Image 1: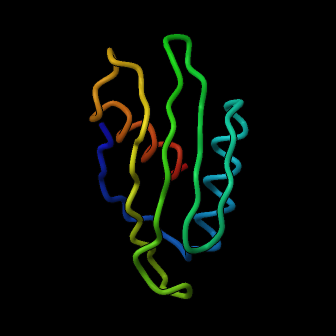
Image 2: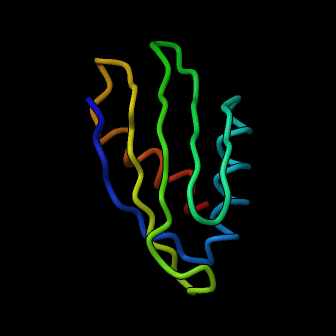
Length: 92
């Protein structure tokens, strides 16, 4: 079952794409997207995490509101852990 949460990124949607792509691919994951929507996946020792994102704010807004939907995750990993980890990737 999919689960969603929102993140506020301190930058434009283009900056979000660059940051998210870098953070996910550095961890061995796959990122496909643009400044409006996209998908990502990341392998972990206990299973894959897959999801998508949708940009909710204007392209040139100084802060970007993002809806993240997790479509697949290891059963043992709580959504709060995934949410905090993704937020940590983006705030570096």
